[in-house]
Image (cartoon, rainbow, N blue to C red; front, top):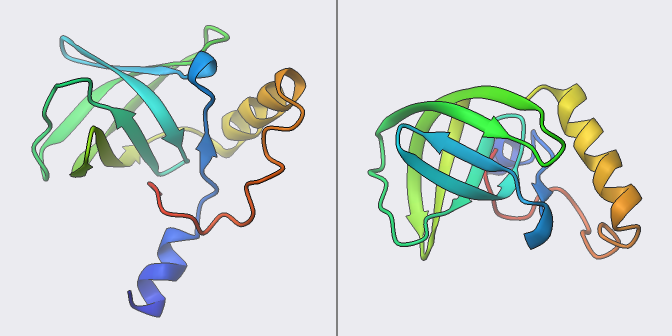
Length: 123
């Protein structure tokens, strides 16, 4: 992987969700659980559904605390049972920090084993 690509992948912190706290993304008549989220990307569980790489989408991201955010972007790829998308309209840094704080209150040890933000994932 090129250094430019690595730097781009590290530009945004990725928040990995415990199963019980996963937000959902509603795109048309399809709903997806969010496994991982950044300001510029999302990794969702496809649950047997298929997404076409390069296909644009627009939908709503609903967090567990009831906050709803409009998202849009492009599906990049599928990896096993997950779909990865780049967000062109996404989640604000403030919202990402609010989510991280909320999860830390509920799961104090959640980020202990995270290491660095350069793990594979969207964003």
